[in-house]
Length: 256
Image (cartoon, rainbow, N blue to C red; front, side, top):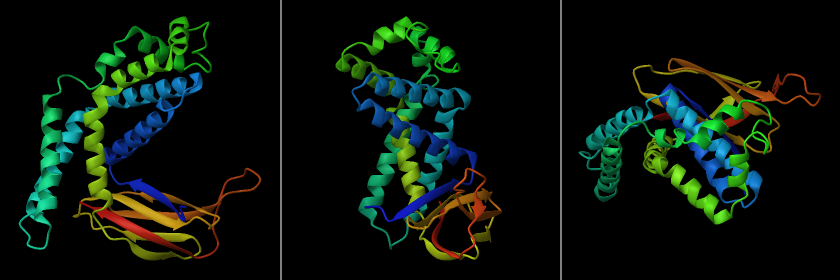
C-alpha cells in the first residue's frame, strides 16, 4: 500500500507536455480495458485530448532533440569506469532504435486520425456540454453500440501512431526521474524556498510527503528558484490555507 504522495513539477515546457501526454495515455489504457459504452466514450475523449496536444506542437521534433541530448549525456557517462557498461549499452541501443523510428515516421503524428470524418464530428461537438449525444452524433452512437472487439480493434488502430512516441516519452521521463538522489527537507510552517543553479539543466522537481499528512504541495517557480507551500484543504469549500505546522518531505531535483 502506498504510504507517500508524490507531486511533480516540470521546470520547462517540453517536460510539461511529456508528463501531460504520459498521464493521458495512462488514462486511455484504463478506459480501453473497460467494457461499457461510457468507458469507450471516455477513451475517445482522452484520445481527442492527445490529438489536441499533437496539433499544437511539433512533438516529434521535441522528442528527437531530447533523445539526442540524452544519448550524448549517456555517451559521456559510458567513458566512466564506474558504470555498468552492459546496461548502459542496452539503454543507448534502445534510444537509437526509438530515434530511428521517429525519424522514419512521415508527416505529423496522428494527422490521419484527425482526418477521419467521425473524429472531426466528435471533436467539434465535444466543446458543447453533452454535445455527443446519440441525436447529435448518430454515427458515433452506432460505433458505441458495436461489439467490444470491433471497438477495441478501432482504438488500437487509432492509437498505433503513438506507440513509438510513448516509448520515447517513457524512456526520457524514466531517465530524468532516476537521475538524482532525493534529499530530506523541512518546510517550516508549511513553507519552503530554494534557489537553483541556472547553469545546470534541471528538468523536474519531485516532492514526496506522507499520505497521512492533511495537506498538499503547491509548487511554483522556474529554473532559477522554486517555492513549495503545503496547503490545508478547507472543510467549508473556501480557499485552502497554508499548513501551520512544519512538514518533513523528500525533494528530488532531477538533473540530466
